[in-house]
Image (cartoon, rainbow, N blue to C red):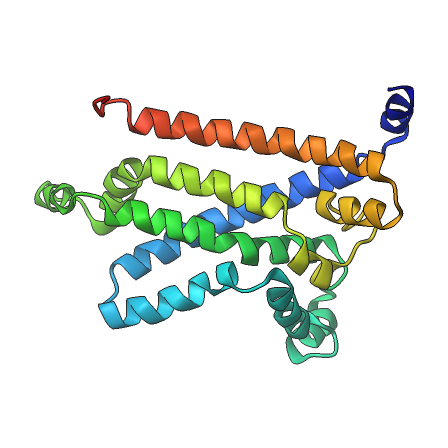
Length: 234
């Protein structure tokens, strides 16, 4: 116990702050992009829907290191896009916090998109028709009818997206590296201290992650409970 307290006093909390910042930024980006993509896919023809859905869902089924490899190829300063961004705007992605956000967004985005799409597909189409009958535009119907009705599903997707972005490791390591105080996240910190044989510090970080995960699961259960409150019990 004494040894644990000493470690807590000396613990560098930057991985927690970096992970939280990355998770929030990636979630905000995925939220808007996911809702936009879900709206477009729901309205697309079956053929287009199958192709676009496959592309948008691909990062969820690929190993994170594979996604990180492609991101590294895309944003490396040795490649066209990476060189253009740096030469024209002084914008660097590799081994920066921006790289953490991009990697986490790419990996977590499919969860937001899939949940938003599923929620939108379950909306009673008669609600949309009723909105049109009342003279509402498509934009008004989307924000005043579709989004509130699909709210619980979108909220669950948002929470899952944050959880996935918070714990992202593979793609982040490939693109942003593990620079202490800059790109070093909780997942990277755990892997690093285990390699050093410091299992006590790794255990402390694991407990922190488990507490965060428990809070996230509890929030999801509360959201699901509100959604199902009118459903009969058996």
